[in-house]
Amino acid sequence: MRNLLPYSEKETIDRLRTARMLTVALISLILLAALLCLLLTPTFLTINSRHTLWQGEIQRLEDSGVAVSAAALEAHALRAKTLKNEFAGPESYSPISAIVVARSVVPAGITLSGFAFTAGVDRTLTIQGVVTTRDVLQAYADALEKHPTVAMVDNPVTNYLKQRDNEFTLTVTFK
Image (tube, rainbow, N blue to C red; front, side, top):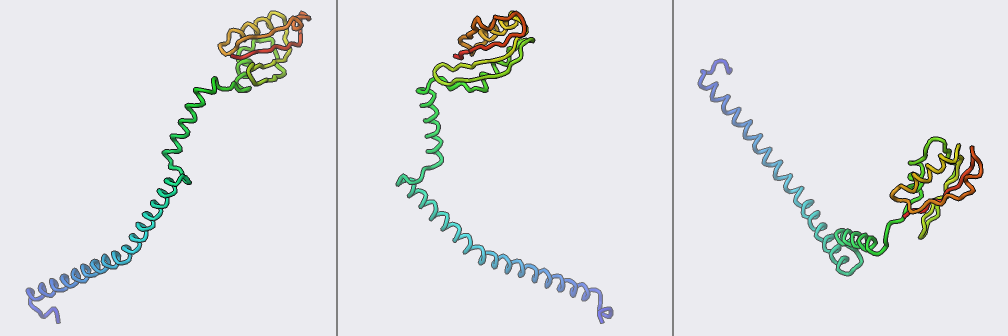
């Protein structure tokens, strides 16, 4: 029957159908937004009230001294580090640092076989090894003494008993 209608009435019917579809879509979106607000509002209010409650509880614990804020912890750590630097004196010298120093200046002709580190006021490293000649051992002791972290190198006369392939023991004291 539609084909029998004049063209102007066909356009009117198409406009009405389009208007009805737009109206239904708009009403659906409005209802969806209203339902979304109705469902999310209690959730938002619950989250907000719990957040306020926990913030109040945290503040109460911080005021009573049971809990400490992150800023207070950072300030305490910084103060402890400052006090350590002021009163502790120089930092302790690690055995690994001492061994690295001893190995960094080893000339050819020396084979290191052992280390013994003694901590305390006099930080000492005892070095044991085998040297090919006396001159190489003396060069090694001189190189150790020139290092900026070394205070003294004890090179006993017993290290020079043999001319070649001699076992030696050096005691290095660090600053």
